[in-house]
Image (cartoon, rainbow, N blue to C red; front, side):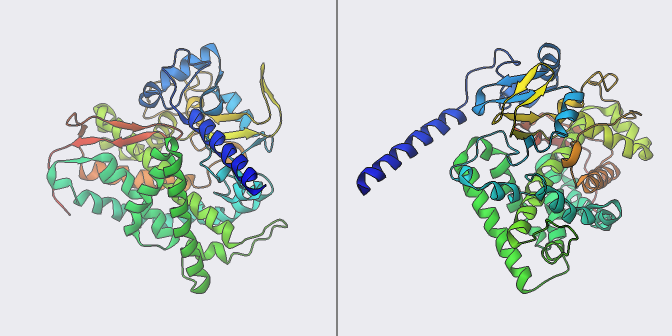
Length: 433
């Protein structure tokens, strides 16, 4: 009897693995972006803007069967409406890629606290978001301005004499992990490991379920050890604040597992998104000398320019899973379907932005949704803006003339977070401070 059961279980497991492999396997070339889009396609990764325009014109809520199937809305109004559909569109699965082996067996509660509040629905979302808001309020994040500025200058000191660097690897992707490490009270030297983990979850791991699972286990193991350490020896850091927070909310249940999930969010989502934004802004300035000259000569323009960088190069496309049938226009999204909340495409909607596919560095009207919309709007937006501003200001001050060179090919990350990953920069050699 046991042998029969084991054989049956093994057969089911093999069938499940074969099914997952079929879903993850890359399909052929895309022939119709409105019915068969692929966010991993090279054209989509390198320049999705014209593809969004085609979708918006021909089928504004496109569909694909790839990766298990999903919907891709591209109009601003549709995205805003969907962002308010809570809990009909659940946030417990924010990646459109199928979960790695074993993760689909998590309970609904485990899924929601995995990276709360971004993966949570009400009521868990409500109180976990309230846990984070004080630390990311405008006045609170100003406490990290000096650290971030000094960090930017120290990174520039490492390559300014060479007259060249990789603007992505040597600069953009180094700032957010060190700032987050500083906030949660761990060694900033962990930055390189954070980058490896982020890549294993949101980069290469998106197309490699085994790597993604391995990375998740390593990251959660690290966070779990840090949380346990704070429980035994509290410190003056955000991890300790979260663990011992008293929250006036009837549903609040702050446990070490919840804090692990929130910290997971800070490390993964708080790093990749911001370094992608910094990198995209540098790429733009390194390929558009007139905009670089404007910022060099008009430094007071920086806050407005940052908003345009965020609009034009918005890095994040979140996912939702329908818990009920939802109708948008003439489209019916059925329970169980996944939806890509394509905030970057919404930022290029001509119904809401004049000349949306043109980068206008002093754009006056710019109510973009780079940080999302609705209840799940990014809680860390103030810190992201501060990091972008500090990084770009320090760079232009120290390296006022630069360009993206062709000594090696540019590489953009695709999937659900888009930004430069290899970006060769050249500039007149300068001096360390």
